[in-house]
Every structure is written in C-alpha cells, then in structure tokens.
Image (cartoon, rainbow over all chains, first blue to last red; front, top):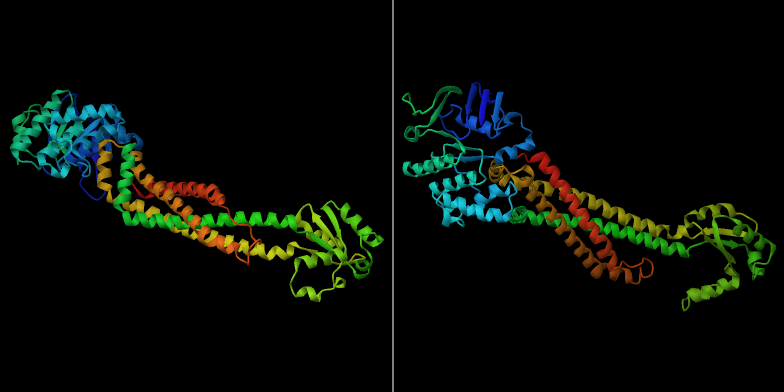
Length: 229
Length: 298
C-alpha cells in the first residue's frame, strides 16, 4: 500500500537531511506507529506521502501512485483517496461539523443525497450524532478530533495518516481516539500514525517504525516505544 | 456548485469596503466606456443626418446669375452637363437667383438681416449631391476657376468642426475609460490576492482533503465576475440617469436642438448596457484568472 525506496529529503535551509535513505513498506490493512523524537523526520515522511513536499531522492509509492512524480493536477486525486488527521484538527472554522465532514465528499463530487445519508452515519460512528450543526469552535478537543477523523474516513480512504492525533488531548480522550482509529483499521483501512505517546504505543502492541535523525532506526512487528529516551 | 456561490458571497461580504470600492471603480470605468460608445453612435448618426443634407455648391458668376432663371444659357448648361456626367455625382439641382432669394427669405423670416440682402447679392447655384459625401473636395478642385463659376463650396467643411468636436469628446471619454479600467483591474487583482490571503489556511485545509485548485479558486473568480457585472449594471443605470437628467436637456436646448440627434433610451439599454455587462464580466474574469495563476499559489 505504501512503499518508500531510499527516500531522502533535504530542506534547502537545513544542512542535515530531514529524511536520509529511508526504505520501508506498509501492507494493506496494517496499523503502524511511526515514532521518534521531534525533528526525527516523522512529519516530513507524512508530508511526502500527501505530496505536500516532493522527495529529494528515492521513490514514494502510495497504492499505484508514484507520489513524488505525480503531476500537480493529479494530486487532488491522490489526496481524495487518503485521509489525514492532525494534532491541530484542521477543521474549516466557518463550517458546521456536518459541513466539515460533507466537504470531503463534495470535493469528490458525490451527489447531494448520498452526502445526506453518509454524513450522519459517519458522525454516529464517531459518537457525534447529535452535534452535526455545531461549529468547530464549540467543540472540545476530543470532539474536534473525532470530527477530523470522521472527515478523513467518510470517503473510505485507502490509507489514513495521523500526525500526532492525540498530541493535544488528555490520556482518557486520547484513548477514545485510539479506539476509533482501531475500529477504522478493522474495516481494512491502512493506518499510519506518527506519535510521541509512549503509553499508547506500549498498550496497543502494533508494528512500530522508529525514525532517528531522519534514518530508519527500528522496525518491530509488535513493538513498544522503547527504553532509550 | 452551491458551495462555490456561498463562498463567493461570503468573500464579498468579508471585504465589504473593498468590494464596494471595487464595484464603484468598475462602474465608473465601464460608465466612461459606455459614454464613449454612445458618442461614437451619435457621431455616426449625426454624420448620416448631415451627409444626406449637405452638398457641394457651385455658385455661378454675376452675369450668368443675373440672366439665367432656368439654366438655359450655354455656360450653365455646359457646367450642368459636365457635373451630371461625373461619376462622383449623384444628382444636380439648379437654384436660380430668385429661388435662392425666396429660400433666404424663408430661412431668415422676421430677422433683421433680411433688410440688408437684395436678390443681387445672392448667386445662382448648382447644388451637387455626391454619391460619396466625403469626396466633395474633388469636385471643388475640378470646377474652381471654370468659366461662369464664381466659387465652389463643399458644405462638409462647414460641419467638420462639429464632427471634430464630437470626435474629441469620444476620444476623451475613451482615454478616461482606459485609465479608469486600469485602476479597476488593479483593484480587482488586489482584492482577490487579499481575499486569497485571508483564506489561505482554509484553502490549505481544503487542498489537503483533496479539493482541486479549481474548486478552491472558483469562488474568487465568481467574486470578480459579480463585481464586474454589478459594476456594469450600475454604469448602465448611471448612463440612463445622465441621459434623463442632463443630456436630454442639453440636446433639446436652444443651442444644440436639431444639431445633434438625441440619444434614445434604446441606445442605452438595448446596446450599451449589454455591451458593458459582457465587457465587465470578461475583463473581471480575465483579471481574476491571471491573478490566481500568477499570485495565488495554493
């Protein structure tokens, strides 16, 4: 589903590469934690997968797309098949919860009646059934993140990318988010989650890929966060 | 599609003062353009009006004028035959001294100049109507100095001043329209950039969710087009008002009555209005498109 072949990324303003010759793969349906300290290259890796940046070297594959060499006008297509969730939620502030979720369907041109039935279903799934008409500013952090997940999942993406989705949340709320992501993973959606959260990684016992200074440091099948910190 | 309209209207509301400035500038530039178009139309019509009336006058000399009531003297007959044989000429009419005096009395009835003029001071005339009124000078050149001819006058030269006045009015309005259009273009371009900048986070999120560049930018384009069209409608309204409250009064006043044909409401609403709407929409779209291409990256 995802394949990185000798991928490097050097930002022009930095002497040290953000990613340095990383090769790894994620199979369809896997749940993978991407860990490492700040600046280790986790976010850069996710940015490359979303084609927010292009690699300086190597090849990035998502499904059958060679992401780094994708024509600019095909990028929306790629993103429509990927869901992404961020630490800061990134909801559209002047749209309601329902409209935020519906937006992901609107951009892929789904007809209005489909949107009207699918959006409430997904909001129910994330336990926000009664809050479709709220504005994002009225939501708690956990609720906002669940809206973001609903938006990421509503068009049944191939891959769900999550960049520290629990970073702004208390442990209990974070637990709820993880349950949700697990549930999504069980539907067959590949999940790649970058995180700092030792407790979550240790409790889930999933595959752990660790980056350190832009290099692949570890890839354990049922890993823990690790002791060196 | 509903989405893009909602976004566009929200965008216009968000920068309300800017939107108003944009609409006003657009309206003024389009209004000037419309005034120019009306001037062109009036000039054309005035020319038509005058060219059907004006002629080349071949005035005959004193002896011929005195003794010839019906162009039967050899000198007159000869001139008339030559004029009628000329391919530039459409028709020739003879006006004797007596007929000229009678017409003079009619035109200046009740005015003091009538007391001063005797039939003897008016020449007999061959009135030459041209096929092409613009080539009267050729007749002037050919017949000046011929035996029996006193003077040849192309009446077009007497109305040339009027046309050159109308022509400068037209050029002035077009010139102002161009400058003003430039201001409108820059304002539209600037507003779109501002609008895109204030919404850059939002647009960034939309792009992450998979919205195409087109999808996120159409609202800006619609903002521009709405501005152009609203500006054109206001400009047309302004022209209607200018016609009703100003032009109609001036053109029907003593000075210009029957000199310049009046501008009809159908000229403003049926011709200039639609042209302005199309021009406004096209210019705004083009400006918006170029701005988005050049300056708006997301």
